[in-house]
Amino acid sequence: EAGVAQSPRYKIIEKRQSVAFWCNPISGHATLYWYQQILGQGPKLLIQFQNNGVVDDSQLPKDRFSAERLKGVDSTLKIQPAKLEDSAVYLCASSLSSRPLRQETQYFGPGTRLLVL
Amino acid sequence: LAKTTQPISMDSYEGQEVNITCSHNNIATNDYITWYQQFPSQGPRFIIQGYKTKVTNEVASLFIPADRKSSTLSLPRVSLSDTAVYYCLVGDMNRDDKIIFGKGTRLHILP
Image (cartoon, rainbow over all chains, first blue to last red; front, side, top):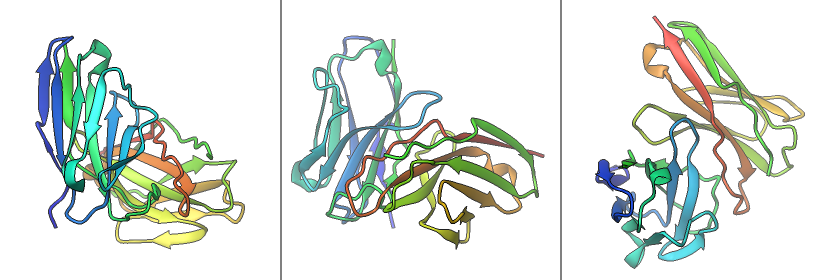
């Protein structure tokens, strides 16, 4: 079974530039999550999709971050404009259930490491 | 949400059994305990989940005492490749509880 795919794996940009990350969840998984992981900390949930609808985006900085999951499969996370403090690993995860049960096993991708200069 | 407390770091040697304890004094009746493992440059990976007593799989064992205020992840005969960060999470399996990763326990296995 193919895992969660993310691209790019690494990205370096200057502050105030824009960047986008892409995630392809495991086939058939209804729920998709985006996390931000700052060095030395655990992942922090940014947004959760149930199929193509947003379940929780309470920790997403909406003035600069946006995400979409068209057709309930792939997802993109965008930062515009980026700030220095956005330097982090952005992890995408998916889980099987169509019910928003966050204790259900989540399968994580390898992440995209972003460095903002 | 039950808050969890874990040691920040631990060292052990190859071939030893490693036990990582997580405290969750405010665990609720319907909360489950889940452990994830994260290797450098990878996303977290589910290890084990339990509600009470003992759960064992091919990777680890999870011991949960009767009061459920703590849990212990046990890794038998560790190897260098078990060097990773281990996260303990607590939440309700039947509700859309927020899942919160703490800083985890950084386990370093020495040769």
